[in-house]
Length: 335
Ligand code: BTN
Image (cartoon, rainbow, N blue to C red; front, side, top):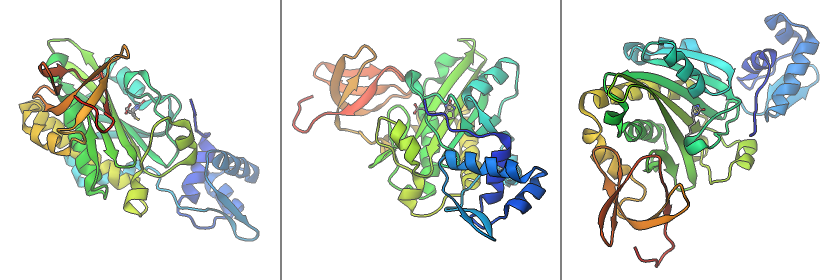
């Protein structure tokens, strides 16, 4: 796995450089209370993490492109985040925000705890896959949400979260964003965002869900090279720099609203919206089962519990979240 991270001084230096303006080594050293050589090592790490750093004699260093780094105070001050009762923490580097929140959940952490990280060294995707991310180019965070219900009653949760994510990304400029069952957010060019939900608790309840979200914000050549599927990013599609703090605030607000609705009424009220966003709705598709076998049919939607409904020659077959992947058939192939 590609593990892009940096030491604390490098992160602090990057925060000073994030605006894209020139900063002298001397000023940065003074601001951070470190030596100039510590700043120099920080710059070296920043370059190693994939940033283009320009050095001009007499002016100092600057990033070729400004970068939006996470600012916990900015997000906490957002009235919507505050009203949603979210308790947000941000860290520079973590193994995986999901792993951390699963540990916190087991230790009794309260619902609505969110953790975002600039870098993950062991980011995880669905079905045991690795989730690759880069500093400043990806938005990676997790949200702990507690339910009175047990895991069995939360079957449509991952699809409900997909609706919240698609709403925010479409509002942020990715107007063509759609959902690929169960909950990838995709653009015509590739995957824009993914969701990993992990559960804890009793089958009959109560239970806790750790909802992990990874969004490709800016094209990052190092991440692209390490990923084996087409990837899309928000800045390319919007043609503008994305403020990751505003995006995270909007996501936390929308997730809270959808999770509250889901807690009260389940997935059913969100089903029509999910289907309207479904990239394969009414198309002939092929499901790849975990054992490698293939099932084909017409994707005719999802049920109230979030399962995929596939119309085959023998009737409508239900497929459960997490067990299958979806692939369009070649043109001209029969269902
Ligand atoms: C997928 O599409 O396979 C799911 C990707 C989920 C990635 C996010 S990034 C934040 C959180 N922490 C992790 O380790 N994974 C999720």
